[in-house]
Image (cartoon, rainbow, N blue to C red):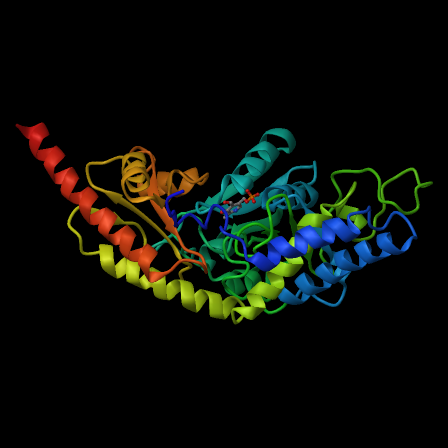
Length: 397
Ligand SMILES: Cc1ncc(COP(=O)(O)O)c(C=O)c1O
């Protein structure tokens, strides 16, 4: 197989560290029994891995002292659905979100509007892709139940002033939930300092776990009602699902292999200097890419005026080409994997005017990228621009 220059880490990080593969395989071989359901040694060992991971992630997000408030879900979408439905309930009210959101926030909110008469205010971004915390403050009403937004945009890579928004929400008594899908593992997240009530994460991006595992870190006094019910392995005689965490938000058998992978992912992050070390490495590469393409004629880069307050995600287009054409040329001619289109975040494109031209080409970097990958991407873009010039000339003739 030819070497693939994988610049699509925003979709999922790839490859995963060898230590993650090893940990999952060894765990499943040796302890792949049902945790928390039985009292034999292997079930206890399996449960210990689950508890160790809860504790580790609780510390990672500085979510408090109770590891049971770290609940597992399938992915960020599942976690966000639980928070949105569990906080908003069924009796109307108001929610605030932003134009930067992924469909995993947008669609649940639209459905809540349709089903439970929840009024939603969408805050546009300003100044190159950032939310102004004062816009959130101004949007809060007496019936606002939830402010929910992402920490890092999966389209333009801007990183939001979460702490400032959190302090406004805390002051005004509104539940504050953050989608950290693109930042967990790349940017430090401190729930207590940032006044966050619930962090929703996915395991398969910069936390380096496999797909199918994610979760919610719920702050000490935050209340999320359960929206799914079933087996918990304990107190089976009770008619109703348990109120206490983690059971409150977990039903059925957990993805233990995914949890073992997430735990190994935590160790990998630590071995690379934590989120700060990973961010520094990836942003150095992003700087090389940005500097390599920003002055090329006909290259349009969106909301990327500086590297500050950014994660290593960059959206661009080549004038005259739809994103999908540029992406296909990068793939077929240069073995460079990017993502093209709307990236499941339609409101960003509506605001930027890129929805009509079918989105952008997104480069998103990971810890296994090298300067060689970046230089190949720069060269590829240069050649595509040359080709686009030829096409335009022949169309004019
Ligand atoms: C900002 C953001 N939120 C949510 C998600 C959804 O993650 P998952 O597909 O793992 O549920 C993504 C995935 O790309 C994302 O980038």
